[in-house]
Image 1: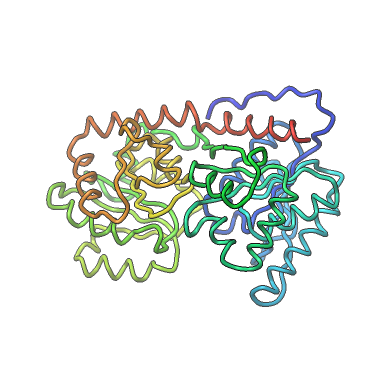
Image 2 (image 1 turned 180 degrees about the vertical axis):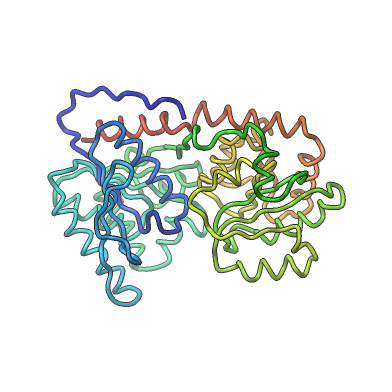
Length: 392
């Protein structure tokens, strides 16, 4: 990562920012929560008070300091919808209790934490930012439209939130079509720590620790759910092995499809060439040992896993959907784009990069430069800081 930009301000309005997310580290988290963590660290480095308000799960304390910012965990009681309601009410009370420490509420994803932020912000006259996540059938807008509670949440957001962040063209269009005002919707991107996620100086050393010397490692990181199309990756990987016999696939993450995917790998006869690893907080060692990154999703926002792989200098293969299309570009200068659900195209892309070392190195270097120019956390963080100042 570039050295964090020093933020000079004579603004007396910005006291701090309170972020809200459904789950948070050290629990297993997805991209939105990882982005909240990255952004909280950056803001704390700017000497801004930062809190992250989240659901209390497991034995973790109700309040603790983490990397310069405070994590505040709210109890949730009862089953299903009751649990969501008790969390929302508890979050509103906690926001009121901390009201003197911040001037901006920043919710990550348009769900219960965002509802709490918007209602409390309205009552306290605090500014509210909601960052939406994903597009299409599993995105925040379309998911919310399917229930009366979701439609009510969208109504609240449209009328009471100050800024709603879209991460891709598709998300922006969905939000505008759902009635959000043009002045309310802005575009931002996710940021990545380009120091933490940097190219390996010697992959052979990293591979030795995994006992995979001499193998080309393909990597997927993320949730193991249907929309991620990991079954397509397994089928394409099997086809690729005939042309590139030294391949090994790492699938890192947890989800409802894990058992099915492990069974599929066995049915395909590739179980010895595929390693499943449960979610890990530090993905760095796997990125440093990998040669190719694959993201075969049906739908994506801006994938943190893709950004981290690009930052690590990996040649990337992704589907032509959502933020992946915008991040890699349609001209194949920063990675290879394929159509979703297309096993043949994915297999061809794996063979292409697995067989052409120079092409893989070129794409990896271009991907790294793309991240340094547009997605470095210092760049994205400073944009958010200016946004906080402007609305405060």
